[in-house]
Length: 312
Ligand code: SF4
Ligand code: SF4
Image (cartoon, rainbow, N blue to C red; front, side, top):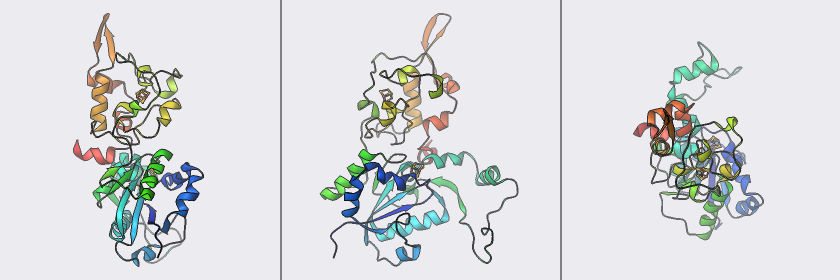
């Protein structure tokens, strides 16, 4: 019998980026694939739901599921994988926190259909298909995996970056997996690993969007007025985006200390943004900060709306 860990990879409401992200590790993917037994990965091998259903309960060691839960089929597949697997891994921001797709919950299901397909659209069989074929129905909300099944681990990111993919497989192959639940990213904030210069007495005089300035290559982006989620977001990606000149958008999820990323970031900004009124400098109020943001929800909850919507 094979001693290799048996893994499954499956996408639910996914853009496909997470499935492709395994290639981020470069040539190491060859070694990873040689050390696991892939028993179910529809994007890679020809396997069907019936193959999965035929497997004994608990026969898969780790099922890595990416994507948000948006349809009844997503939910059913997550439940089957839960039954067949010893451990479930929420792979990527959508499975972990709801991700970008959960922002669609700002609108109802009917509004989404109307906006995308036009007035009067009703889901039905694809063109040319008769009989009982039908599209899976959308659920009312787009929810993270943990709202449907018990989740043991998370490899966060949109998609997960190479250092965190490597961290997961290194732990798996060493036989020293942490006790669940566990998130394969840092507990400390991204600012701790960001090489950009920041100052204790930093202040922000205006809030700008990335296309409005050419940022100084060395200074903290937040100090230059760009909303960088680094102070409240888990580190572990080697500050990929800030190093490249783009502010962090929060894809690894909030640190345990930050909790709700929107509330934590708003509070951080209110203590940094200083405006002037008749020559007098004063700290901005939270409502003034919000007024100057083009898209507060999309900025603060780009990946975590599905998880934190219910708590606020
Ligand atoms: S986490 Fe990002 S890359 Fe992965 S499925 Fe969601 S949107 Fe796509
Ligand atoms: S650029 Fe962003 S991640 Fe880097 S120090 Fe500034 S706020 Fe933190």
